[in-house]
Every structure is written in structure tokens, then in C-alpha cells.
Amino acid sequence: LTALGVPVSPGLSPVSPIHVYTQREVYGTVGSSVTLSCSFWSSEWISEDISITWHFQAEGSRDSISIFHYAKGQPYIDDVGTFKERMEWAGNPRRRDGSIVIHGLEPSDNGTFTCDVKNPP
Image (cartoon, rainbow, N blue to C red; front, side, top):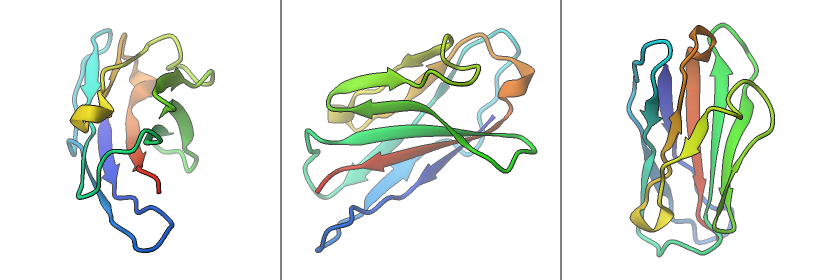
């Protein structure tokens, strides 16, 4: 499993970037659980409208799918793909944490996970 952080800047001027940090590589064994860590930092206060999205791109695939959203203070596990029954929200935006847990790892989980954080405005 590979986890990548993607720095995201809000679209309004003046722009203040959010710095997103993840582990470069995460290893797990089939059947176990793994935490995909996503921490972030911004010089701005953390808005009530903060959103966190996790995407997954399977190894060898060109397409990525959205697997998790945090928005309006609530976690939402996307109802697509093989992760929907195996994911758990482990983050806390007030602590600048957008981590998730994937349970019951399968060989097909190998790929790239991307954490995307937006802190409007």
C-alpha cells in the first residue's frame, strides 16, 4: 500500500496552502488492519467547512476512485468498491488528522491512496 499526501490550496485569494503529510509506504498483511495516516498543517484556523477526501488507485490502473469523504463535520464512506464494509474513520480535523483504517486487507488493496484536504475559504 502506498499513501501519498497532496498539498491543496483553497481557490480564493489570498491563498494560504495546506500542507498534507502521509507515510510514503504502508505495509500490511492479508486479513490484518492498517491505518492510513493523513495529517495536515495550515497557518489559517481550521474551518467548520473543512473537507477530507481519500482516493484509491489500484496498482496497474489509470483510474482512481473516491473511497471516503469527511464534510460538514461527518465522515462518509463511499458506497463503491471493495472498501465500503471495511473502512473506519480514525481522524479528528480539530487535531489536524484525517486518518482512516482499512480492515481485512486483501491483495487487491495494493495501490496508491491519496489524502486531499480543503480548508475553505
